[in-house]
Length: 217
Image (cartoon, rainbow, N blue to C red):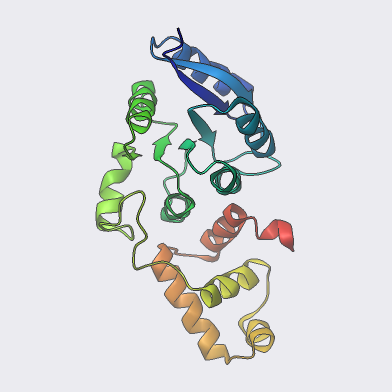
């Protein structure tokens, strides 16, 4: 009789994927039933295998982990998704929370952290890597929790300004495209960066990559 948690593992690095697979399969209550090396394959495999959970790397080709998560949550709303990444950036965390992930674990944490997170998420709980708890408690997420939406959510107009900045447009060009003043563009940019905990243009580019905006250009 089948009692193990059925897990789909999405990770583009073969050696890392194999290591996680061995770790998971060594547990008596969980089993890797499928593997994917990119986000598009993860979505396809999840629909085919209907696992209990997807352990999802964020930085993958074809479709990154955030975009794959958004797609999966539309197709399979009840599927549990545990993200695995090296990124501790506020922007990454906020976007994954908004996309509906059930947990967030850092690759640099101890292997036992992943196992603990899998069990917690499978039990219906949200899980945040302990290394990020302090950041969340003192940052943008506040008391929103993994499934909540805090007051720092950006508006559609702010998102549009960020998208155009990421594409390389100047404040003047953005103002002309959106029919607003340069001062308004600068205000939107400043407010959005503050909301998302961004410090530089590089942060905006990272955010845009996660959103898939640069692929649309």
